[in-house]
Each structure stands twice: as C-alpha cells, then as structure tokens.
Image (cartoon, rainbow, N blue to C red; front, side, top):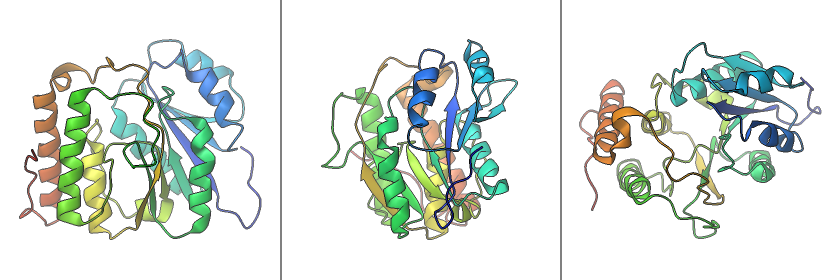
Length: 250
C-alpha cells in the first residue's frame, strides 16, 4: 500500500463486497483516483468477485470463507484500521449507490478535524434525490432516525447510510458485535454512549436496484423493523440504558 504524505491523516477506504462482480472493477478503478489505501472485505462471494480481487494490485483484501453479514464486514474493517495505524476509515458500498466521486467531500470534512463521525445523508435538504427509495425502507429509516434524535439529540437525518468517515480512535471505544444489517442500531447507541461528535454531509440518493433483497425473513418490512428494535433494545440494555426503548413513530 502507498503511504500518504506526512502531516496529513492516514485514511483507509473500506468496501464490503458480496457478489458484486458487475460493479467491482468500475468501483475500484474510480476510488483509486481519490484515495491510495483501499481495503475490500469479501463476505463469502460466490460469483467472480474473488477472481476480480485476486487480479487487483495495491489493495488489501479480507476474505470470509462464508457469508457472515454486512455488520461483520464493517467490524472487520474497523479492526484492520485499528491494527494498521490509520487515523480515519471511510466506509462505502460497492453497488454504485455511493458515488466514489464524493470521497473528496469526506476527506475535506476530515481535514476540518471537528467531528468523530462524518455520516453521509441522502435526506438532507442539500442532498440530490435522483431516485426514490422503496417506501418500506424510507419509512423504517424515518422511524428509527426520529427515535434516535429524540432519545440522543444527535440531529441526524439518515440513520442507515453506510457512506461514513470514522475517526479510528473513536470506533476503538465502541462495543460492536452485530453481524447483520442491524449494525447501525448498535452503532448509534455506541455513538451516543461515547459522546462522539457527529456531522452529516449530503450525498446523492441513488437506488440502482430497488428490488435488492435483505435475505430470508428480513425481506418482510414488519419482521425487519422488529429485528431492528430487538437489536436496539439489547444494545441499550448492555449500555445500561434499558429504560430507553424503541417505539414506533407515525
């Protein structure tokens, strides 16, 4: 891996991948225009993603022998950054719903050095809403974002966006163990418990595949929301905040 210039933060870009052969080369080609250090966490892909990654130069790869879940890829990325001396880790998806061209926006926000978490938002007034999200995803996001703001006064607008920059010494304080898609519920509780400074920056609202599945029972919105609530309440209990419970917002 290339070493960044002295007197600038060491930044790692971490990209979870699960069967992304149709996007992978294009995404890796483009991100290399903006950042030197790239980690790909292949979460047990069964398509040609592994073959593509094996041919790439100047990237690091963590390969799961089986699918362990989106949350586990994020946790693995954090651990890699902690163990490799990085100051910041940017996470982004590989399905072109997060545009590599917006990486410089996160880098500029990092340089301001006034936040611990820089979270992309598809729902700020300045965000470019090029697509419409599936109604159930937007509604669940709305409910949980509103509840987080009410309980923790974080004033965020998008609880589920995975395009983020994280100060590594801040994520070292977090106790994360949720392997699946509910990891944001655990994440925001840890942000509040550790009194981390959060800022949001606008990103485009893009849904290339609105029919993409979560898998199994989580494809049902009611089941998915119930699962998110369960993870949230469990995290609150572990953090000594069991008097706070997730409730519905109409």
